[in-house]
Structures are given as C-alpha cells and as structure tokens.
Amino acid sequence: MATALLIIDVQNDFTPGGALGVPEGDEVIDRINELAASYAFDVVVATRDWHPPDHGSFDERGGPWPVHCVQGTHGAELHAGLDRSHVDAVVDKGQDPQTEGYSGFEGTELGQLLREEHVTAVTVVGLATDYCVKNTALDAVKEGLLVTVDMAAARGVAPDTTAAAIEELQAAGVIVREGE
Ligand SMILES: [Zn+2]
Image (tube, rainbow, N blue to C red):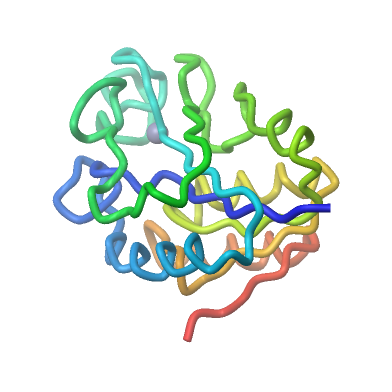
C-alpha cells in the first residue's frame, strides 16, 4: 500500500491577482511544500485546471466563472512558489468543454496512475476547497481510497460554500483535518 498527496490547482489564476483568485490562495503554498517534502507520501501529484478557450464553465459561454486557466497561458501555469522538485506527476483536467472538470479524476489518468502505484490513501490539498478539492476528494472516496483533506493547505472561494463542502466531505467519510 502507498499514500499520495494530491495538490489541486495551485495555479496563477487561482491565487490573488489571478483571473479567479481564491482569497489567501497563496497562503497554502508553504504548507503544501512542507507536505510534499515530508516523505510522508510515496506519490505526489499536482493537477492543473487546463481549459480550452471555449470551456463551458466560462461566463461568456453561460457558465458561472470568468475565463480562467486557459491551456498554455500564464494563468494556467502552476504558481512559481510551488516546489516542483517533489512533484512526481502533473495531471491536466477540465479539458472537455462540455463538463465542469472540477474533479482531478474526471476525464484524466489520475485514477489509473494511483492504481498503478498501489495507492490506498490520499491527502487532498490546494484550491479551492468548495469546488475542485471537494470534488476530487469525493471521487477519491468513490475510488475506494482513504481520503483526508488538510484544511491548513486548502482555501475556499467563499465561506458559506466552504462550510457546506466540509459537511459534505465529512458525510462522505472524508477525514477533514482542521487548519491550525
Ligand atoms: Zn476551471
């Protein structure tokens, strides 16, 4: 059995100053770098929201979000503060224009990658707690994994949806480790 750290969408567009900046989104980076360097995890995976220019989640297409994380743009790059030296794989998600692509498992090779590495437990961190962290953690439960979300290394878009996400995660059997 092996453990994995899943670093969700720590990208320029999701950090302050970005197209869809999450409040305090950059404050997760030091904690994530510590976790990735801790050798508590056998596998470290970073996901990127990686949308085509016509993605259905964009407001100009009738979706809920401003244009963000368009493939190949600066905004879609991983934040420069994220220490890449401990990241074993980068998984791109949200490439299908017709689906939300919140979850790192949706339409990606992540599930297969974790099975090949015999991963049985994952810790999910990053941005944002109420959307992509939540949906990735819920899909990880469906994959049969033991799932922890480390709140010290995650931030949400809004307080009410983040509180609801925590309840939903706990109801699904996810261990929610509170931030200090
Ligand atoms: Zn997106």
